[in-house]
Length: 131
Image (cartoon, rainbow, N blue to C red; front, side):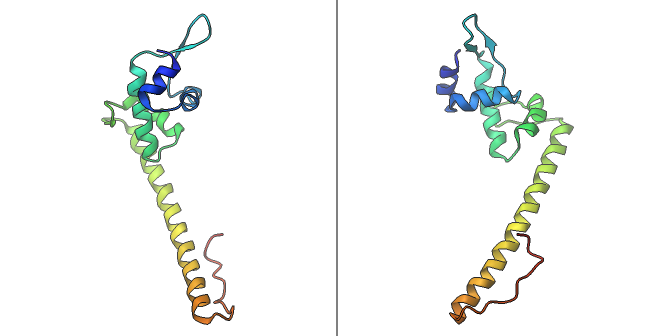
């Protein structure tokens, strides 16, 4: 099937499909006229990629995971590379969430002080909060 058909069947625009191909996540044969030609399995592969992107995995992580993927959701049985990639991604997310919570708390202090005083006097800047 051509890229337009794959796009229609998966709901993923052609630009994204070309990106997946450039990242090595999706394969297409080339016709004599240069058009991409995807086989039927590409529909499942794109669905798997979308689910894994939704879980916060990078395209690099997904490249490790796809050989283990089974089904649309996908299930990922017996793939040690996957566990390592997902644990690493989860740790990065937890670190980001911690930094965001610190920033949120610092902003709350500033907002509360501004609302209480209205005078422009603010608490001292907490240098432990990342910029």
